[in-house]
Image (cartoon, protein in one colour):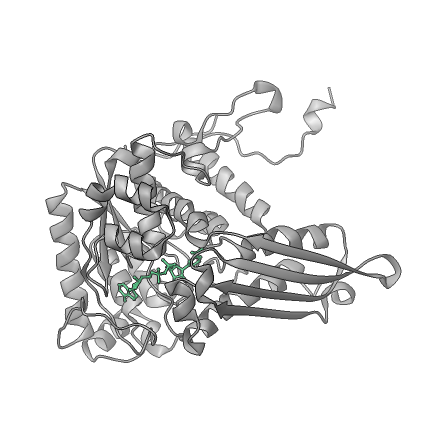
Length: 438
Ligand SMILES: NC(=O)c1ccc[n+]([C@@H]2O[C@H](COP(=O)([O-])OP(=O)(O)OC[C@H]3O[C@@H](n4cnc5c(N)ncnc54)[C@H](O)[C@@H]3O)[C@@H](O)[C@H]2O)c1
């Protein structure tokens, strides 16, 4: 056994602060309340269900993750939110129509208790939305300070000494990192000067980090993925993670593409299209927000297939991604993949995937795990980018000069090995020779 890291206990309530009280956030909150009351099972959540094998296969030691490392209990979570619309979590869950009305009604009381604080919002960043529950202040720096006040007040009112923030708000328009994002001093000066390159999501991340709260980004916007905010995270000793929850079609892609590469099968083209009719779909119907999502979705195959190493197999494939807003489907997204692959002697074959999924049902357990693991990371003294949480993201954040690891099962190995490392257990290499060489 190696020496475990010192992990502070998960005592007392944990504030889970979510900008964006829409479909994903309300499905998360209602889900936690339902599980707490024994009304449903936390399916899809590793923190609640998964185990980790320790030692040799013959040792038969496979504790649950929550037995291996101290995680916050669901009963200790206190949800706080901001939204552009004043609807509480009950009204918003009714609007989102993800969960059956009967379940939402049975959870009316705890859901009504989550009332969104006024948002930091700019219609230039999310063009398809406009709502009344928005903060007003002369500068972006003042807006950031107002968010800090909200955080402090919430923590005090709910008796929380620890918190995490998980961005569950709409996807902002595409933004390239620029000079104002390069360094913390310039970033803060730009906030004070109302520089248009400071996105609302960045103001939330800045406020959270200033208040000692780790931050994760569930959407593809740049947000904490800029040097200025990463420097702030390191300065404060806080973990950050992102970006863009990996849930439906991209999760499939990061399972199927490694299979092609593992067997040295070629790829001629991959056509992906989606229809969905929720508010997220409406926002993504705007080309600015779609561009952000498209960039997040497109990069996956290049990184997994490594065309530079395998030009004959992956040097010239087409890759298209479409998202179509189609109201009748609501949150029940349908994602199709038409995959043209190439086998022995160049013979073409096809794979078709039709994933009739439920967007927020897939995203809620991911958001829960990210919140609990970020809190664990903080208590274990891990700061800056948490690459081991790549498992949960379409565009995983990585350190400078590194390429992201997209393969879902390599990501899972990394996640579990990080948990073993934190707990002081031996890492598992899957070599296994010692079972045979006596
Ligand atoms: N499977 C998934 O559902 C999935 C996967 C990956 C990423 N995401 C991302 O997660 C985010 C949330 O998805 P959703 O389906 O809940 O969307 P949603 O539209 O139902 O909810 C987003 C909420 O954020 C609010 N909002 C927008 N800008 C805000 C701001 N600046 N401050 C506070 N609130 C703001 C909106 O009013 C809305 O209520 C989206 O960005 C989406 O792209 C979702």
